[in-house]
Image (cartoon, rainbow, N blue to C red):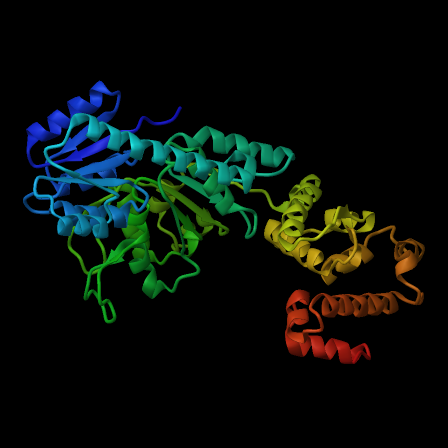
Amino acid sequence: MANPFRVLIVDDEPSIVSGIGQILKRHGIESVGAENGERALALLRENPQLGMVLTDARMPGMDGYELVEHVRQAHPNLPVAMMTAFATPDLAVRAIRAGAEEYLSKPFDPEELVHLIKKIRDRHELEEENRQLRQQLSGGVGINSILGQSPQIERVRREIEMVAKSDATVLITGETGTGKELVARALHGLSRRSTGAFVGINSAAIPSTLLESELFGHAKGAFTGANRAREGRLLQADGGSLFLDEIGDMPPDLQAKLLRVIEEMTFSPVGDNRSIKVNVRIIAATHRDLAAHMSAGEFRADLYHRLNVFRIELPPLRQRQGDVLLLARHFLAYFRESMGKRIDDFEEDAAEALTQYPWPGNIRELSNAVERAVILEQSGSIAIECLPHEIIENRASWPGVGDAGRAADSGTRSESGGTLDDRLAELERRMIEQALSASDGQFNQAAKVLGLSRHALRYRMQKLGMN
């Protein structure tokens, strides 16, 4: 069930807040009031589902213009309207520049106010419907984006559905490339926070010296080069979900600060003594064995237990052999569409090679292999020659695929006969030729398609006697 559209009314005069609330209530619109800008920002953190802000321009302390700027930074998609008894063209321009969508002069007619609120509400609902439709058309971030029919992946989908509606901290584990971020996005998409932000940060991808600032933000002058205050990922995720990827690589000093966030929902930016309250759902992921790291003293035990409230373990692709072709055909459909190619399916030997390969890089490796094959293929189906070399070599080593079987597989594609080394050399030569053809003779591009450096491609061509 969709959340009701609620208006946050901000005015330092309680009678105005109450009066506007009564007008809106008579027209079936819910509202909540705040007496100043600071209280309004606190309510937005506590109520991420609010539909819009209606604020007075002149208030003691934080005025309406400053409030609008704060709202725009923390909630960029939240509509804001401003009202004032001192309407002038200059003030109207100032309000629009601050980020207000509408400007209302006091005193106003109640019908004018209701019309403005309904207009913003209808536009907000239409934008939300369009966002959801775009997600559905692109594969979305919901449960249907978790593809597969194996018992292991069915279990993962059930676990996502069970925990999504709660605010429990979730720990997603699994090898690199198994789809941990996809599961995190599905959790967010099915949660009550789905209209809030999904913000991710990868502990392994950011230098430890910068990670704290990225996560918590920093004050102006907090360190050399901090010429202005900067909002961190944690505040950006306020009202939504924070995805902590590769949590096992987080430095020990940051682990203690993250523990405080999970326990108290408060944090302090770097170089700032203020304690800022947030409302976020924590989703963490790692390819590491956190229990082993904890035993070795490399990961805090208290943080581990806080993160491991609900654990979702993703199976490697080699344990989902029946899902390989389903996933490969999904990627084929995507890449042929994006490249404008007419490719129907995989040829039988290519399909067999895909299903028998152990996929150490998991789904990410499969996606890359299919993308490469679509780039190379010039006919209506993916031939085995278009697959990466290691997949072809793996197929050649199967028990039962002897000289006769390989000769039959080569069929019309191989005229050289001879040893396996001869056939592999011919196959390598054909793949290089196809890559050069697909790249219009551009050597650097052909090397990129083949996953080789320029020097490695030149060496292989010389070894094969190719000019």
